[in-house]
Image (cartoon, rainbow, N blue to C red; front, side, top):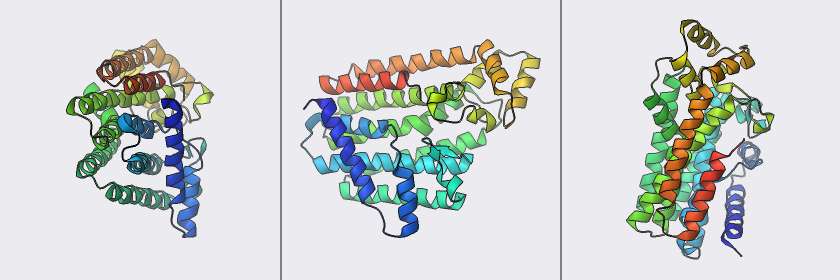
Length: 317
C-alpha cells in the first residue's frame, strides 16, 4: 500500500471516529448527522495526517484522534460562520441555521467544539493542547476583525492578509504543527511544515475569495455572497484601489446590496484588474508554500505537501 492509499484509509478512520461518537439525545443526533452527512475536502485533517506520518505506526490511535480534532474544530467554525453570515447553504446542503434556527447553529457548533476539546484531553499532549487553544482563539479573532470590517472601504491590504491568516491560515498552520509535534519531529521539520501549511491556508482563502466572484456553478457555493454581505475581499479591494470616483461609487453601492447586478459588477472588477491582482497574490503564496515544502527533508512528506499546495492553487470549488 503506497502513502496515498494509506492516507485515504486514515481519512476514512477519522470520519468513522467522528460519526460514531455522538450523544444519543435525538436533537443533538439529528443536527450532528446533518452536519457530517456531506463530506468536505478534509484538507486540514489530511494535512495533519501527512505531518504526523513520519512513523505511521507510532501513536496510531492518537494520530487518527488528532486529525478528528482538527476536523471537528474546522466544522464548528463553519457552523458558527453560517450563523454570523446568515448563510443558507453549506457544502451543497441547507445549513443548520436555515433548517432549524440560529440558536441551534450556535449550540451545535459549541457542542462540536466541546467534543474536540474532549479528544484533546485523550491525546494528552500539553504542547498540542496549547497550540490548538491558541489557534482557536486566533480564528475567533479573525471572525471578529472581519465582522468589524464589513462595508469598510478604508480596509488595508495588511488587514485583509491578517483576516486570511487568522480565519484560514491559522488552522492550516496548527494542523501541520500539531501533527509534527505528535510525531516527535525535530525543530526544523516543525518550522518548515508549519510555514508551508500557513501559506497553503492563506492561498486557500485567496482562492475562496476568487471563487466568490466566479460564474462557474461547479463551485457548489452561492455566487457573490461576500459582496452581498458587504465583505471586502481581495478582488474588490484591488478594483476599488484602481477605480476613479464614479467607479468607486458604483462599487460602494454594490456592497451589502442583495439585489446587485452581479455580472455588471464582475465586469467592472475585472476591468479594474481586481481578479488579475488577486490571482497574482495567490501565486505569491503558492510560491512561498512550495519553497517551504522543498525544505522538508522527508521525501514522502515533501511530495504530499507539494501535491496539497497544487490542489489548493488549482481548486475550482
